[in-house]
Structure formats: structure tokens, C-alpha cells
Length: 330
Image 1 (tube, rainbow, N blue to C red):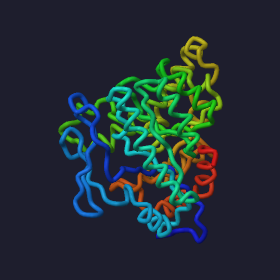
Image 2: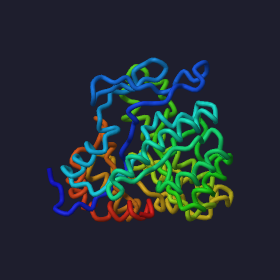
Image 3: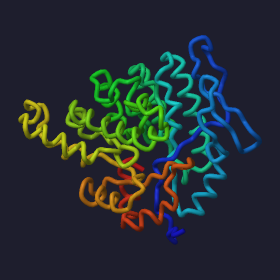
């Protein structure tokens, strides 16, 4: 393992699952309310609708375990965000807000225990944009640096006009938006190989989310919006080049986009979770210079191991730290 002597890396892509959840407020309708089944002091299984979703351990909720791992791995700070399945856009707005506030409070308590080492991205009930905007102010007051957003909201793409007030409020409050894959398009067609959902469908959905935000003009309209994408933006690189061809052949989509799609894509931020050094080097040096920050997907099995060594191999460690500072306004 090649941890630097002085840790400067800020790992922006890490997840939290609370050790317990409040009682389901609407058991007749919210069949997917989360439930933690503890298996000893440091092992658990989270269930939705009575079905096991993921095996977890204490790293998901234990600050001491996280700090120990960060010290071991040469990580200066982590940014905590909810496990994406907790975003719960499928609940009623009121129940979604209740769960969001509970999870946000758990993250806030973790941040308070190690304020120099832990920062937070909260969750908001995007199924009701007015409620989501109101919750942004609460998160800001509680010291959160931004919010995590699913790559779609109940199948609605993030560039949809109904979400414009949300982006305007994020811009006004100077809150970052971190887009993470969630219930990707086409997942139902991969039932024979469910492992393809996280390995293939997630990056596709993240890339589609980025393309939709660009094509819908959200990034043109909100030039100061700080928006980052998980998994290195997924398929964002080939999709951007293809969308550029459409932009060229349609006179800027009939004048709706004054700049090339790459202009907007290069202004976004991307985590380093691409697993391949050469790909990361291209993303960092050619596609979006200065816009790549560190991300590991801690504490899950799919996480990038030896994050410091991986970044060093791509010569990205310093720019990853500074990009995170810029993305999160630390």
C-alpha cells in the first residue's frame, strides 16, 4: 500500500447506512421502508420489502472504524453520503422527507464526532421539489456541503423542467450536487446476470443523466451550479463525443445550446472511481482537466482499494484533492 506521508486526499464517494431506522410511518403503502437486521455488534443486513438487499458491517455507521481505515489508507477526509437505495423517491413526499431528515441527522452526528475528517452530502425528497428546496436550507445550516441526487427520480431524468427550481436553489445556496446511479434504465433486461446492473447499467445511467442535464440546458442556465458525477461520469466520455456530433449537425440543437456539449461536460466534476489508471489519466488530463476528485465507494466490496496508490499511478493525487475542495467549497 502506498499511502502518502502527509494525507491530502479527500474521498468524496463514501456511503453511510445508519445502524437502525425509525418505524415505518405508512406500513400499508411503504413496503420498501428500510429495515436493519443486526447480526452481532458489527454485522448487519439491510432489507427492503422483507428481502435482503446488502450485507453491511460497522464501517457503514461507526466513525472510529472509518477514521482507523482513513489513517491506514492515507485519506485526509471523507465525504459521507447515503447509500443510494435510501434516497427513497418512491415514497410519499411526507414519508420521504421523514426518512431524509433521519438519515441526514445520522450523518450530521457522524460529522460532529470528527469535524475535520468527515463532511456530508445529504438527501432530499426529490419527489416533491418544493420540499426538496426547503430541505436544502436545513442541510446548509447543519454544515452539509451539498446533496446526493439519483441518476433518475422515479424514472424521470434529472434535466426535466420540474427540477429547475431545485438547481436554482442549489446554486443560490452554493450547495454541490453529486449524481449517483440509481435504478438504472434497462436493469430489468439484465435479470439473467444481475451483477451487470452495478458493473454496466450504473455507469450507463450516470452518463445518460449527464447528457440529459446538458441537452436540457440546465448547465447553460445555471453556470455556477457545482455538479459532480459518480463512477467517473460512467459513459460520459463517449456519449459526450456522440452528442457533440448531434450538436454540430443541428446548429446547436436549433440554437438551444450556444456551446459544444464538451464545454459543459468539461465544467462538471467526476470522481476517480474508474478502476483503470489509463482511463483516469485521460479523464483527468484530456477530458476534464482539474475536475476529477478522489472517490472510492467505501465501504463496499466494489470499492477502489489503495486509493492513494491508484491516484499516484495516474499522477492525480494533488489535483484530486484540490478538485474536491473546489467541488465542495471546503
